[in-house]
Amino acid sequence: MKRTTNFSHAKMIFILEKIPLFRNFSPTEREKIVAHAHFYHAVQNDKLIEQSTLDTSFYVLMSGKADVFIEGVGHSIAEISPGEFFGELSFLLNRPRSSTVVATKECVLLRLDRQLLGKLNAEIREKIKDQIIVKMAKMLDAKNKKAS
Image (cartoon, rainbow, N blue to C red; front, side):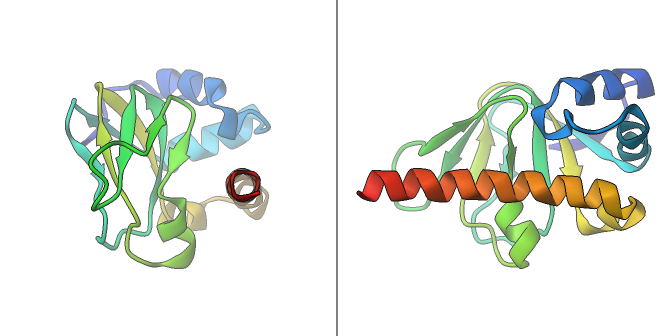
């Protein structure tokens, strides 16, 4: 996976407008994110994140597909589609990655980290954090339903 600057500012804004995480953001807020954001390009079979490594960023899959793997399980446990984000546990808890994510198609990703968030105003940070909380609550709810 490599950082890319091959996308115009307008293209990055256009992509952000289509991603659910950023739907409730104003055009000005999306502009601020793009101004400070880092976009990455990955080809098929690239590791996007690797289990047990420490990296306190999380990623939004802008295009492409990826699979999630956990050591000891011989198959993918989940698929990540455009608009979804991953790596948020390490971001929030400052702990090693709990899984490996591998690109199954060519991908474009937006990397969000603490440095980027520090450059954004509090309202934007809160909107991002709210989306992470919603995702985690849905995951917990699904796990509870599965257990009952």
